[in-house]
Length: 258
Image (tube, rainbow, N blue to C red; front, side, top):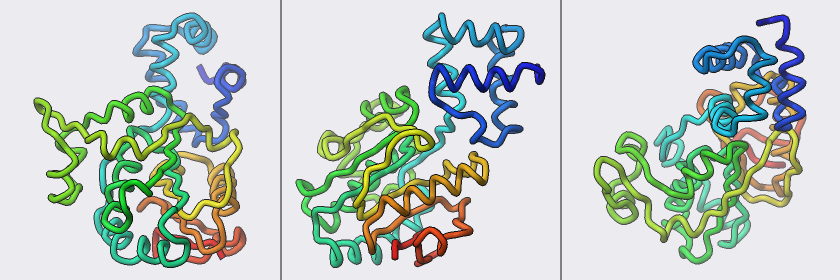
């Protein structure tokens, strides 16, 4: 199927505005090929036709190629550092009406974690989180707010007791948390970035991007932060050229806009 892959990428760009050239090709092609095989379709041209005519296959494709692995308070030590050091610092610098963006938010675990983390420091009615993702399916799941026991393992016990209700084997996050998050579709590679953020969190997503695409997104994040604002990235990521894009390294995973 290699012969048609370049044409396939061009068709996907036209249909979805998703630029597959910005993803590591070996990994992405393997995912797409397995999806084509799973659906019993022969070749990229036939798969493109199926994507155009079958909404179930299209939704499956979008959900499958956008990597949606998330959990609450992922890497708890970094969230503890946020709680003890960085949230108090942000409040001291900018006050309590902070502008916060959870980018590539997946199923909502991280923006909801942010609301809970900030609730220890700021009155709940002052907390507002923008959460964005490319995949409307996971945004739909995030709005429902139903999670597995494994997904909420990292949530501090008092917050788990206060904000989750067990529903069968799953856990429902409370409306008190949900109402402080606004979800929107957003393509990190193509859409406009808002500015003057105090805090941006984008974790464990850019590892699937090419170095060029990764550098472009990090530069846009830097441009979107106000001076003194923070960017929180994933434990598998690093910003090699952070000085060039106007950031200072505060910690392995926290960078401050100069």
